[in-house]
Image (tube, rainbow, N blue to C red):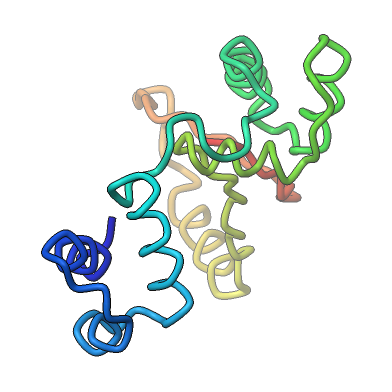
Amino acid sequence: MKASTKTAQYLFEKGHENVKFLLEITGIPRRTIYNNLKKCKLQGNLTRKEESGRRTKFNTNDSRRLSLLVKYQITATANDLQMKMVDRGSPKVTSRTIRNYFCNSGFNFMVPKCIPYLTPQHKENRVTWCEQHMRTRWNRWIFSDECRFKLHYAKIGRWG
C-alpha cells in the first residue's frame, strides 16, 4: 500500500471524512478518495481481499513443464514452446503469456552479438606471420588451445 493511501486510511480512522481535506493532504485523486472512503466504511480498512484478481491459467505442473522445456530446448521461441505445451496437455495460452512467465521467472531471451569478420589488415598480418614461421619445426611444439572457426555466424536466440 502506498504511503499516501496509508495516510488517507489513518486520517479516516481519526475521524476526517472531508474529501477536500484528504485531497489536499494526500494528493490522491478525488474519485480514489471516494472509493477508499466507501471501502473503509464497508471493510474498516483498505487492504485487498484474499484471492482477488484473475487467476493464472498455468498451475504448478504447467510451470514446471515449461521450465523443463526451456531447459532442454534453449533455442526454442515462445511460439514453439506454446505449441509444445498444448501438445503435452497444458491449457492454451498466448506466446505473450509464456514470455511474461519467463520474464517473471528471471529468464531472458538473448541473441548473440555479431562478431566482425577479419579485415584485410588482419588477413595480411596472418600471412606475414605464416611466412616468417614457415621453416619452424612444429613437431617440437605442443598446442593446448583448441578453437573452432565458423565461416557464417547464425543468429540464434536462446533463453538464459
